[in-house]
Amino acid sequence: MTARRLSRLELRIMDVLWSQGPSSVREVQQAFPEAERPAYTTVQTTMNRLEAKHALRRVKKVGNAYVFEALISSAAAHCRIIDEVLDLFGGRTQPLIAHLIESRKLTMDDLREAQATLRRIAAQERRK
Image (cartoon, rainbow, N blue to C red; front, side):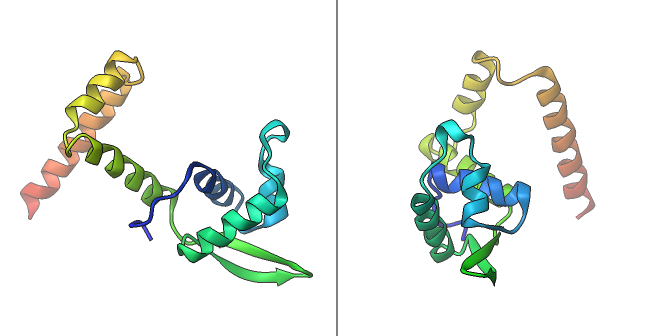
């Protein structure tokens, strides 16, 4: 599934499924804030598209409503988005990191966490 791009609305629907677990179209629609809630049919169509992309599946039917669950994890979807952004920069991370620093979205805590992750990966590589 990760080869297929998800739209902003598709990601928002997936966020609902990741946080609430298996849900009907109505439950997903109701999870949106009222001021920006898409129409029921819009959510239904989008969820059918997500099913076609193998991002979610129908798990049961309750009355006339189907209950859907996510087939991909939030981590997999987020990694795909990050990979797409990096592709825009030819795979280079420096422009992205520079922007995060200049926009003050990258904190010292983020850097410490990144350093710890790099050390852990380096240690794993040395053990191989």
